[in-house]
Image (tube, rainbow, N blue to C red; front, side):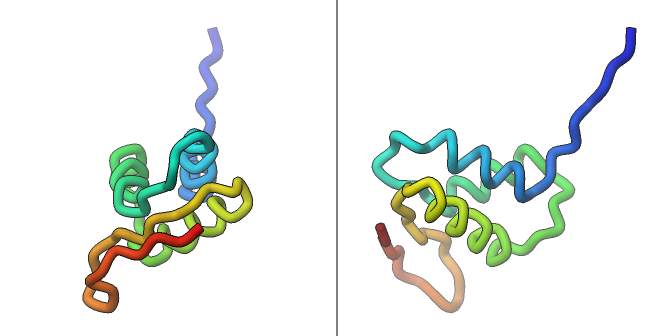
Length: 81
């Protein structure tokens, strides 16, 4: 029996996460990043990199985004549609 495993890239994980949230009111960047880091513990992308990937995928899928990741630059959660 041959077993083959598909490689999960950060880009594919972000795309799949956003696609799975198509019916949601909005996508939480903080929650999405936690999910990706759980799926890919060795992920070397920064939170900012992941935020950009998720935002781009959200635009493509028409999913509103909550930029709710707490950072030194943005202390207030932002909601964009």
